[in-house]
Image 1: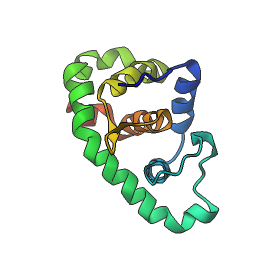
Image 2: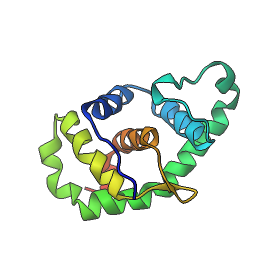
Image 3: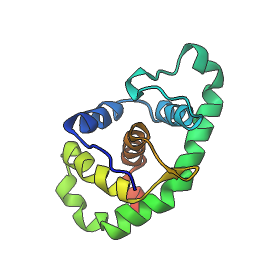
Image 4: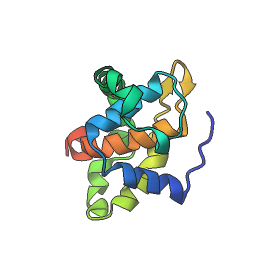
Length: 138
């Protein structure tokens, strides 16, 4: 399994993305899944992409739903999020820093290849927006 370089910048990217609309994040994920390789900070849903927005959102949502069982296993059962959730109240940065390596352990792949770092960042953002208490049933 390839190693990711998790830095303060990685955490900052997740924190910035948390301010974005969830549907826009699904569209960006769908965009990435189509194999278009652009840095996450340069991906905007406008212009040439707007025509495909519905398809991109659908593709992103479908992929996220597909990986939810692996995320649930890693976050809820292996990490035991429900037992630790109180330590993350009012500290989103701590939550992000904790989730990044946990989501890496889920070993999420696309066509047998480990997801790129930009996709990891999106997945961590989406799982937070989805709701960890909802995911884990706390």
